[in-house]
Image (cartoon, rainbow, N blue to C red; front, side):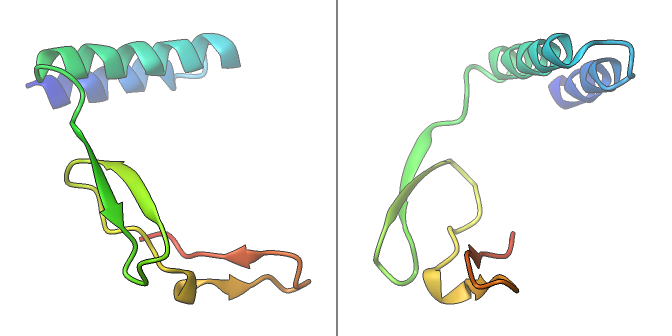
Length: 85
């Protein structure tokens, strides 16, 4: 039920009727209401990347963080792009 209310709230936030700052505040408030309905935000869990080089704090249940070996150089070579999971 909380997820349905959250999705409904997001639809209102994203209706195009709000300015960007008001939309952002609306989305934050929708998230706060969902967290409250679920008993609080998900606990934060430290996860070590598969290559062991970093620890990333993620919400419980989040996907494993990508490794640096997943990175692909950008076309111009100025950045490394890590694909989303």
